[in-house]
Image (cartoon, rainbow over all chains, first blue to last red; front, side, top):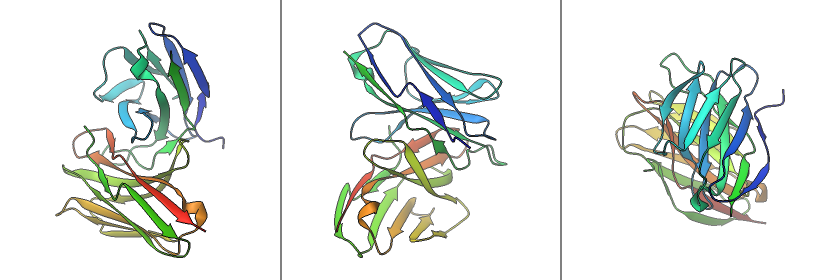
Length: 116
Length: 111
C-alpha cells in the first residue's frame, strides 16, 4: 500500500498564475481533505471531498477550488496566485465513521508551493 | 480561526523524561486527534479519541480527553531524541465536517 501520494513535491510559480496539485488517497479511503500550512503554523482546512462533492469548505476564497474523481483521487486548483499562497499543501485521506465524522486521517508528504 | 490551542508552544526536555502537551478547544466535537510532524513534512497520525472516551493508550503515548473542560493532553513517556518534532491536536466539530488544527507544540528532546 503506497499510502497517500501527492504530486508534485515542489512547485514554483509567479503571481497571477494558476496551479493544480494532485492527491491519490490511501487504498480503501473515500474521503479527501486539503490543508494549507504556512511556515511555523498548523494546517488550515481548505475543503473536504466525499462522493465527488465538496462536503465542507474552510475560510478560503473562491480562487481555491477542487475536484474528486470516481477513483477518489483529488485535485486542488488555485487561480490568480498571490505571494501569500506560498505554503505547504497537504492532502489527507480517510473514511467516515457512522456519525459522518472523519476517522483517522492519513496525510501525504505535501506539495511545497512557492509564489514569486 | 483555529479552534485547537496547544500549550506549551515549545518544550525542551532530556531523553528519558516525560513530555506533556495540552490542547484546548472551543466547541462540541466528534473526536480529537493528535499528530506529529517532522521538519515540515507530512503529518503522522498518533491517536484518535472520540468524544465518549476519556483516555487512550498507544505504546509510549497516553491521551486524555475532558469534554467538560474542552481540553486534551498528550503524554509521551520515556522520550527519545527521535520524538523531536511538532505535535498538533485537531478536532472534528459536531455537526460540521472540517478538521481544525492548533498551532502546535514544538518538542525538542536532548540526547
